[in-house]
Image (cartoon, rainbow, N blue to C red; front, side, top):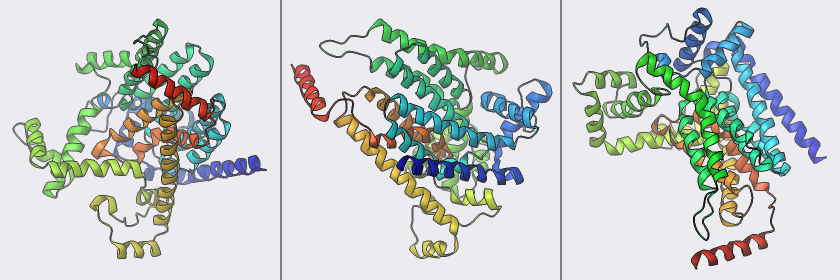
Length: 446
């Protein structure tokens, strides 16, 4: 009976997500932002000319900022369906693929209950459901990250090295969709080494472990290195993308200038560029306004963690943008205004629901991580938990002041997996684990 109820709930959540795609067909313009238009322009130009460059924007180096995987994804949608709006539906289908892979991970680890719980939490994510409709990279990136992680899980289960090749390749493709994943390719390689080191009685690393880490890294670099060479030949920069510099200078720093001067971000960018030495001006300005700098960065981090953007969700679905509470923007809670909004704004209730689901996911995930770091360190999947925690923290914190609800999307499958581990059944009984842990600590202290 319980299995049937869970299956019915999952099917209902799937139907809800499919139904949400209809507005994206009727009003596709609502699901595109400036970045979306850049990706669509690159995809359209690629189909028309066979060349990778933009045509709609005054800066000619947009192809240096935007790596090719997401434009190729959009180009494939345009080629198959004659309209980019279909990408919204395809991305919804990708969330179902993610749900299936999450279940497979639970099944592969012999933790079916944890896998099913993770699937439910993932499909319940309001933020993930809405952001899948946006013509943006995050949902596709979540699939690459999850497939890369699944590769590590499969190696844990089968001990076949080909899964390191698969995992590295998926991370490489992910980095070509969102360059922020590139450090993860290197970071996971380092973790694969560190977690395989035998620290007692002396530090020792097997050649097999070192070979596995190298195999993982090279499998990703097979995709990344050619694009870096291409950028060097075309733009004179041996880099995957210039997007990090643009984000730091024109967003993270420019937002501080905008905040202090009470102007828009675009006006702040123009003000900075008009200085004799823009780089020096940015640094000196930040030094002079450190409290505002930290406030702006904190606000972005909170936006990513909370992942509630109900005014944007409402505008996408209805074309009308409701008022916001302004809590995160101003760090103030006006109780009277909040009560009035609750009376008149049903979308705010959806935001509160999304916040409640996120809170449940965070609490379950935090308890699961606590258990693994205090009671289950001898468990076979402990290294996978470490990788998941570090990956989630990195991807959610790295956007800093530019943080937004959509930046949580790439890690929502991993968040759901951590929460699902609330139902983890230890391979070793607790008492055995505690005894081993004590013995190891005693030996180490000697």
